[in-house]
Image (tube, rainbow, N blue to C red; front, top):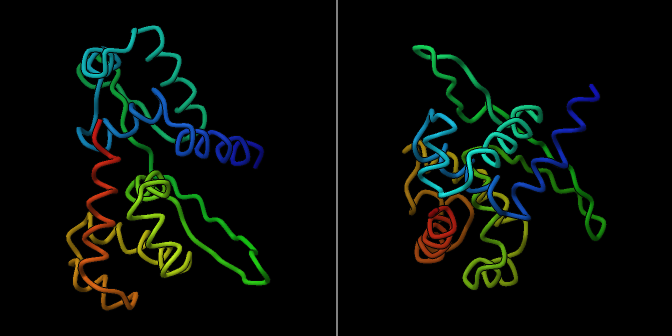
Length: 168
């Protein structure tokens, strides 16, 4: 149980502080399994720093490693962080996962912050949940818009900012 509590601060640090750890996670989301050397070359981060970050991310359960043909490769772990939050007397529950974590990185972007102020946090969190299905090709922009009760243009703007943030 203690290990679970160690994961939460690490995940929140990765999401909200950004930096090299976030770049490593985003690269793995985009490319799949990678060696430390691949990560070092692609992100132009010293190999010692890459190994340090990989060890911390693996200890937190955010990534996993395996040996393939004698080489140690790393990939995103299958994690979810369920957040239950009480704000202004209202209970809000949402989940952060590898597929939707970039949504939360976009909260400071102009379109996203405007969406939250105009449509509310609850609709934004519903968008974050549906974004996973969008990434998997299960829903379209117009389907998301209909489900959360906003325009397709608003959803497209959110997706554009999320994808911009996800660029490495």
